[in-house]
Length: 354
Image (spheres, rainbow, N blue to C red):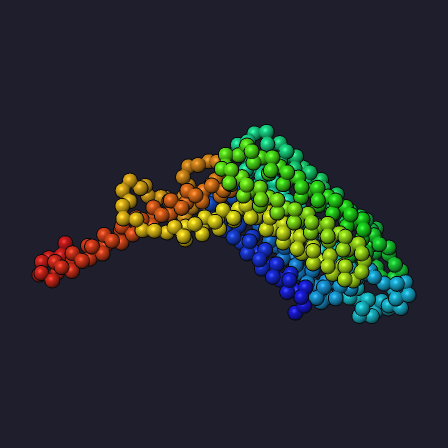
């Protein structure tokens, strides 16, 4: 297996794990009933992610990166339409074109999930919701513009996998400059917009300073996504075989970074809270006055702020609640053992067991 295949499948496994944990956390915290819009966008991202990795693996590992680019006019003229290389190059061009559509759709789906997440954060912030609604419209318009750029930059569409004569740069999906420039510019703008919204919302949110700093640091990971998108564009425009392969790597890395960045605000408090619970699990002797929690694992304590849906502050409360649950279990176990000892003693004395 090539290094490219190893890398993309490693990133795929980590990305699917992150998506799976995020979906499980949301199902648990929402009791599986009141899922938000970002949950559905995240679920939609899973099949798109699988398709993109499959296309990238097919284009590079099975076809060797062959397409209708990187050929001289003489090479195109010598390549017969019935030859095996001609068929591979046609198929490779079609895969690159499909990869563009899936890649853009996946990125914009993740951006929509980010905007939906910001909408849940700002549900009690009034005026902060208007920029978010504008963000949804901005995402829709830019996705349509990017999609049309990919599909209409080469007409008729069949020229996108034409080998001879040379169809021109705009009809070579792997290195089409118009597709690279339009996608990169709109991608960077739509990456920056949700991050700016989240940073502007933080001063108005009822969170501790530490939580705000943590959320800001996590949000700034979006800079990695923006850097990966720019690198992909620059490398692909070199038109060399090595540059195009590196561009494909950075396209996969960009998607992976976007998945982690968008889902980490959900799963980060869960992971930190879980580690805290493992560290602080105790069995106190006195639990008088401690209320019993209600199932499921993440109890609904009546808080209607961000905590129940987003999971930012509920972890601190979970620590005490779960310890109370453990305390009740420990005391119940002790009482059972004590009762068992009494039954054993009374039976040995020939008395009737209660």
